[in-house]
Image (cartoon, rainbow, N blue to C red):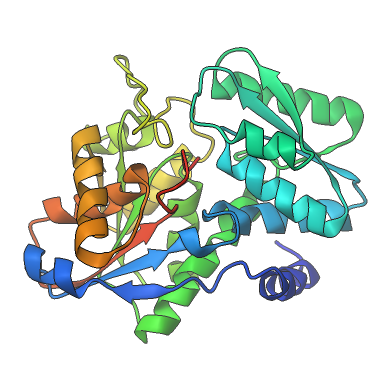
Length: 317
């Protein structure tokens, strides 16, 4: 159970820091092109650092502060680190960011210029997370890594995306399409709808991602992508080690939704469509949510795609 006082403080600080309450916009031009009845986009790139990660960063930092920690640490490939740094600065906390060397799409320069402590970890994302967890235990820092011991808070932070959607729509959509990286955002959005007694079908979109590969293969567990190829386009979503993969898969299964693999070319095409038709600059990996909707056979429902990052950022993890 998450303490009520922590939830109240989270809601208060979201307003103070202008996190959340992101726009829900109807895509009428793309509706006509795709032949869909109603199509909306939730613009999470309107958060202060340009991604949905600000929500999770705020709740975990507040939790650390209330538990008496003075340092927040987390493993990230870029955006989450930028979010944590901003929140920690606002709350007067220290921040340490563990970044794996194998990922190119980071925000290292921005984090360093703003005074964040970056710890470069040789290898992959999994190694960065395990190193962070170990050093947090040794130094009594608060572990804010995705999928760590505080992952319940990370998932809960994203329930507000669903609540804001339902309020703006006046009810539930039929389908919600969410890009899948760690799986935390999709799991949180589903949990948010469940808490309101709503059950839209969840569509998880990705590329070179073990959770989505498992869904595509008809499994109820992640399936490692043996031929994984990382590119600047799929980097934000790709991975075999995904902290909240099982929660994301369960959300897709329980909602009678789907997982869908989207190619780099389709991600880029979807981003171009959003820019040319709706004048929205969305990161290609984030635009995979639109590409997924294009592949659905049904067109007679209300669809919402969650754009997790705006287009001038390098990645969404």
